[in-house]
Image 1 (cartoon, rainbow, N blue to C red):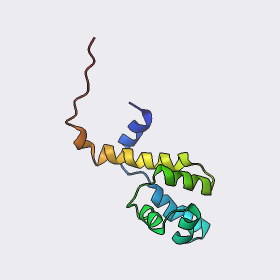
Image 2: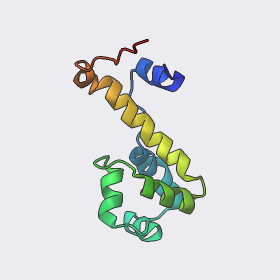
Image 3: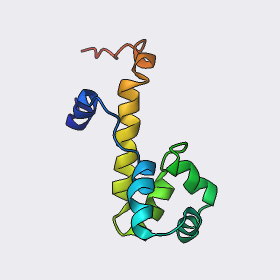
Length: 107
């Protein structure tokens, strides 16, 4: 199994979401409002609000916008969201996959 997935399986606490990082670290450091941040990214204030409130995940499109504006690249934001999504699947939604039988390879 992938090492990162195994690490996430062992984690007791959910990783910080991109929205939490933006809300707690990035926006305060920038000293700008949600509205101004949304305008700089070319998205609606509602989109930013939903991400900050953790009602909406960071899409690849938004990751590109964040990475370009903040200068830290889309991969950071994509990977943060992937970690949260994977943790949720392993810890919250795991039972919904139990019925799936692995494909058995034949010779």
